Length: 326
Image 1 (tube, rainbow, N blue to C red):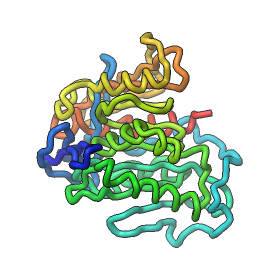
Image 2: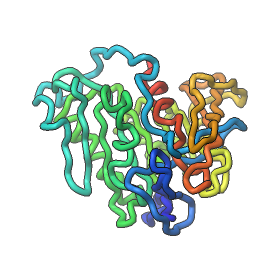
Image 3: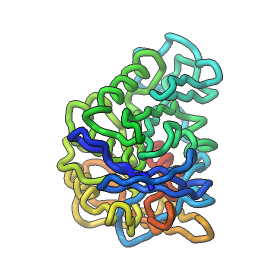
Image 4: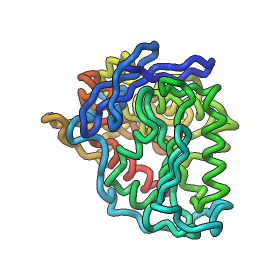
């Protein structure tokens, strides 16, 4: 299986692409470099968390999710410089092969700023992993979605090699399309999740991208985070690819957000069915934080029974979390 860990020193990390969602394929990501087969529609996540459970990427998949909290009414937002430059792109899609894909909902008119979701694929997964995972969800109908392709031949994100591309994609979106600059969100799986965490460990890059909130799935610990950041961190409580439940990564967010050690159950995330299993998201919310800090330590065995896949509850939970940000 193909792993996906990104590396700040320049070597590609491991990570996984794979089956999670509808196809239930295989994949994985870890701290060591190995290979793995993946499917074009699969996405997985992993990570530790509280003792509660998670979901699987199996047949019920992590994708979808309806309108979440009923779909928030759009606000005026903070318009990017690109507002008013042009209308909706043909077929609502802008694509540059092996570099990036942008999708625009039917409601996009080029003048009303919309929220942006940036998705970072796992190692070995296709560029459109998060386009596929969010298809049919409120992300598709309410958000501009942007995904990039890592420079590594195996599809693993490498911070030193790829951060310039990430910043370029962000700048292109702000300069040429109508984005709410105060509502830019990020999610990623495995190597893609690691890339998000590394961005937050670099203050200038984190401030440039100005994420409103993030939802990494199965990342790793890259040291102290340099900014406070609302987070929904998702990882399997028994992620065999990561070799743990992600507690050390969560601790970095807890410290950056000045949380207390105490927590309460986060019941806003509903359970789901995956590959015939009732999945428990296992989410908790830490107390006293400067920014919302949620940890979902799930029991979804997806991703070849590694618990490293994007769980079936994830996309809906992310949408609700992001859309509920004040």
